[in-house]
Amino acid sequence: MAVKVVTVAEMQALEAASEAAGVSTDTLMENAGLACARRVRECMGGAAGRRVLVLVGPGNNGADGLVLARHLARWGADVCCYIVRGRPDYDPKMTDALAYGVSVKDSAGDAGLSDLDGLLRRSDAVVDAILGAGRYRPLDGQVGDVATLVNCIRSHRHDLPVIAVDLPTGVNPDTGDADPRTINADETLALCHPKCGIANFPGAGYAGRITVLGIGLPDEVSASADADLPTEWMTPESARSLLPPRLLTAHKGTFGHLLIVAGSRNFVGAASLAARGAHRAGAGLVTLAAPESVYRLAASHLTETIHLPLPEDAEGRIDPSAADVIRQRIDNYSAVAVGCGLGWSSGATALMDRLLLTGEESPSMPIVIDADGLNNLAQCSRWADRLRAPAVLTPHPGEMATLTGQPTAQVQADRIGIASQSAADWRQTVLLKGAHSVVASPNGKRCVLPFANPALAAGGTGDVLTGIIGGLLAQGLAPYDAARLGGFLHGTAAEQVRAEYGNAGVVASDLLDRIPPIMANLRGLAVTRD
Image 1: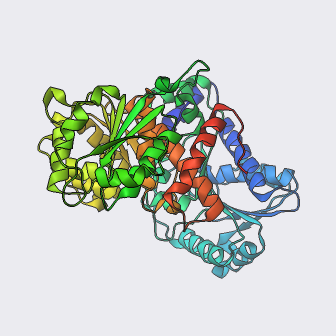
Image 2: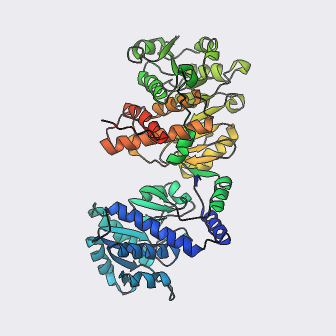
Image 3: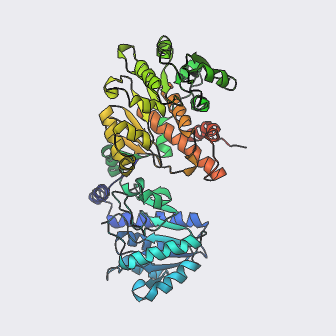
């Protein structure tokens, strides 16, 4: 079953459906607490002898924390539950935790939070189970003071992991808005489905790594969620299902022929990175159509690529007349990628218009349009009505602002909504790049890619993504599938590079050789790198 991103109301409806199907809310809570305890144990490298502080709130999130505490104590951990806000008088989860030796302290008797300060300083891990996916409220009074102290201690104790149950306390579960004192988590354990608040920013910025845990919803309820909820959280299982088949009887023509229209005198590398990305994604043949001056440089190292030199203008950009050269050969290709390193000018705009938007002679095979291709496309009159090919548009927030006429800040404030509305308005697939990239189809489907990686803030990484998506389109994937699989492969490669090199110093070409092993591992063919 697909993992979906849900609102509070949608999650409550799933819980009600589970109750009606015979699996009670209490059973789901027990399952959730056990799953969280197992993950916390894994994070600590074991439970026995570990000191764990569980911050417990008044509602179901706090009850999940009490169940988690009970299991960790059962496995030998020294667990203290710190009650941040009062629990109900009848509290069987508390009773069960106490029976397993969990100690309890209450903030009501902790003047100046001195007890909490000491607990934070000597714990091996902290679990935030204060406020979950219930009614959002600002962090005032004791809750705000506790959150502030946790963040303060955590800023000095970098070895202290903070793990949030479902949501970091302070994040609005539906919007992603966050109180300034929101607890900064290293990892958030999303129960059953990630909530919108940790898919959107700024809330996602407090969540750290997001791990989705099953809580035992009945199969029929999960199937209903899969069919009815529009926003998917992309997972390795989803990616595996999209991989193009690689038959033993295949040949290079089986896997398509991608034409890449890219490059200018100032951006030679963009064309090269896109071509290499397409090869690594499995395209059978790749042709690079680039200005003559780019061709002379690129051909020396792109030995597997077919080259189509194009006429160029005085500034080293593709001349608009090149559209006619390409059109004469367009039937040779199964997909097109256009835009990387084109430059932004009246000539480049004329090229986009003549190549993609002019009548019945325009390409009809799938196209991925990126970077300056989008900036120039935005200058063409009625471009969305005139683009007849099925396309993937891959704007970053600034390019989306150019395409929509909305401020970049407004794009960032509602990434899922704006990507979805734009896909519907343009009748094309949109991949809105950035932390937690959003892929939206014109028919209302959408997915969130679970990657927020500062290592990708380097020139050329978007060109690699364009090549990957183009290579997948050439192999026959539909635009929406090529965009979400391409984004997942790209994001996974970036995570691997970040783990090796850190957040800074990564270059786009570092991603390329990671792509084939990632696809092989998704297929179940173990690949190791020296």
